[in-house]
Image (tube, rainbow, N blue to C red; front, side):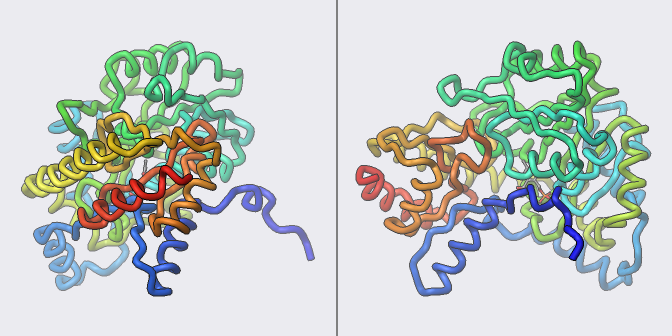
Length: 390
Ligand SMILES: Cc1ncc(COP(=O)(O)O)c(C=O)c1O
């Protein structure tokens, strides 16, 4: 037989998905498992959004939709960018609606990359960034951030990773998995390096609404010299609890969006028609649902951080945004994978090993706090018992 794709064979399967699967298997075997490996709100999609989707189906909106988004949704996204992000340069022609933000990231990379290009990935970062780069036959170049320095980004760290082939920098704030939100100094550092080295920046803003304690998430696209080099990626999964609807979007410079549109028409084609009506209801409707969900995450965040302070062997700086805690396990020589496995076996608590997010995540385990409060309480009780034995 002829050989099959060596590119794909070189890409590891998603560790988050694998851990979630392990959790499901244990639960199916009757175990009282607390599964915190995933990354999706435990809330259902707000009612007014569901109803807009249902109404669209019932009205016969079940045919191929416009490939890049309905005019109503494109307009709603442009208005949202102005209203919430102070981004005024984007027209509907510079937006593409996608089946999930994940596909928006993938299509953006397809539009930007040549084989062999280098892409800077801040380490630790979301599990799919490096594989996505590899799938475009480009090289993920990890910029190791230090947990001791609260995963801070600096000009020096970025510049040291740059090669003549560096073309793109991927940024995610609020960050999965670290919970960090970019500071003014970090934004300045990114802008300085992107402009000086003529880099494109992919700004993954999917957790933008989930920020705590006065931290503000700002779009990189509004910074001087950034509009022409920044592609904003965002979606409905996290803010509106719409993970299953598969709805996201990208917005950026016209030549890039044009190529991303070519890519989409020959692959996914479009997002599902009736989800777009739901997306319009989400963006144009009442926003109180976001504040309600954020308040619950914030309460859980405080509860978990306070309890971690009392558990010897766990160190967890306050998280500023998103819905994950990313504690470091300080009194064990075990790797993060071994710690995660021990927590599954001994505590029936499923997390995601920090190393899944890159070598700089070693020593950490990520737990989602977008799960039921009683599950988080169980997790805390069990970790208090098991962590000292690791
Ligand atoms: C940082 C980050 N970007 C993008 C996504 C993808 O979101 P979507 O459900 O819209 O594909 C996720 C989902 O976990 C994420 O954590």
